[in-house]
Image (tube, rainbow, N blue to C red):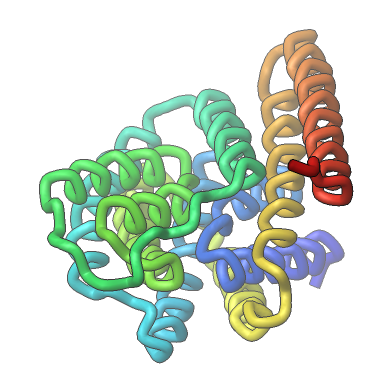
Length: 290
């Protein structure tokens, strides 16, 4: 076994950890891993990521189902619409230049990182089932599936909020149900790509096995690791990776310009957040007397 393959397999465990802990994020890591470490063509990397994430999500779905955190009816409706969108996206992706796909993927990474750093609102519901807005669920599923099939990303971090908002699901149920949806649309997107792309199956299966190990570990860590801290840290990592991919794929000197602007904006963001936390702590310690 080569050093490169060992590194790829070890990093694939991190992919599984992400899915097990957060209900998403697997494709955000898998595509750069397969492209820049394993040396796969971008289209092959996207297709392979759909298989890895889809298989890992199937296993994680049943783990969540044992805890009662999968809403099967909502997930199957959303997933069916996503499968149609993902298959179309996979078909289209086979005919789009790899550089364009990687730039689109990098932009999706940056958008995902922004959503993770901003945080999400707590679900206001109690987990009781609300009337299902069927039209909105189908439309949202088509759009999310199209994005996933095209660039191999945008899984859990698009599906979870959609299920919580449109389906009226409590957050733990939205996470579990999202894994069912991710499974369905990942394999549909893969089917679309396989019409024009061939894969190195021994490598893909090795990465998948490692990701499954990571997913099982992640499922056990969900009650130990604080979700907010994990999400913020992962968001920073995804942001850095997104900027890196963009800087690599854009023609120079635009790649360096993008990296520099992103660094300045990130520094400003974290400085603003630090001042806001300091101000909040000061006001808490010295409350204004009435």
